[in-house]
Image 1: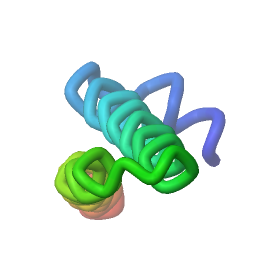
Image 2: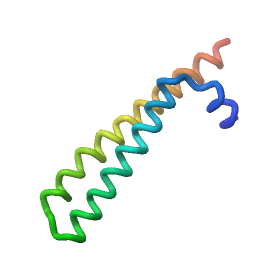
Image 3: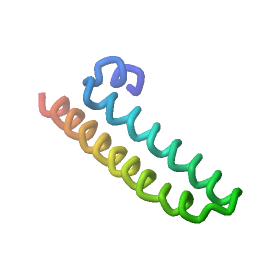
Length: 74
């Protein structure tokens, strides 16, 4: 089912998934660099980036859930 869903997934869903993964990855990298270098400002600045990535992830789950619900109703 997962392969079929990804093949038929909308462009908006794919954009949400890749944006979420990218923002979370950037936020984690900034957090690691900030904490290892002792740059507290960079470590704190990474938290909103991770948060936005998580919100996009949740939005992607909502989009996917709506598509699955619509397919069950057919």
